[in-house]
Length: 380
Image (cartoon, rainbow, N blue to C red):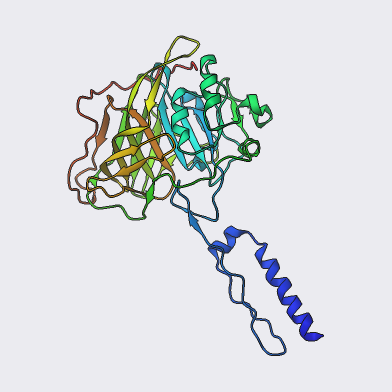
């Protein structure tokens, strides 16, 4: 009887140990537990929980998680953003009047508060298709665009399909005060596609052949973005519209592990906002060039996405995959006719060796003037 009680007690303890947080087990492998029985036999501890690598960030995760994409405002009035620091990927895309919007992709962490949320655009349909059927949160859309959105493969969790997930923050000015409860929103999309292989490759160490870079900046008609490398932590500090990009949750701002400036063909679409501004359509299916920034270096690469269902791959000159630095990835969908301004480190700063200078923009591009501080359209 004593032997049976000892074995039962040990089994109960082992079962309890498996109910601990999986993330805790992954960081702290369980120590071997010994339980004495009449024969002195040891009861083995539970097997360690396997850890996979997130296909979106390159960081460890316990299992695939559903994908939530949220469309965000990206004018100065949107600052500070809520929840953006938890995004796995952050896309910047041009909309009407030369301003930009953000499409933030969440999977590893789903914040309770995300915003300010704004409306969808035609570029989002092709962009999101590579994620399968993610949950897509947006505040609305142009009337003519709704049929195209309804036919897209994403799961619509706009206020039309769950207004309870959204709330106004009256401490902010409309329309920059509309926020999503990410947990509630994702709950409305139980069939949302989990994160899966997108074609991204990650590595802790950068590849050879990079060119030292201190800063990359770009301007649209009434918007700008800049990424400045900080060797203290190996991240790029993000500036949006001439200001340090702020985070609602802390004072560290927005920071990127990797910055991908993806040159795309951009053309007028059949859609206009209520003020008559045409919505540009960025082609994210096809192939082109890109500039990848990580660890204070840059690489000229090529991107390829053969169809809507495929992810986007980035390859170096020798045909090998361009490895991103694990962490949050920022992808700028930049009209290939626009120019990126590159600043190199001062001569007295030690920088990695380079093979060739970066190609800041495709041939035939012309630089655009930076927007003035007073320029801040708010339509759409």
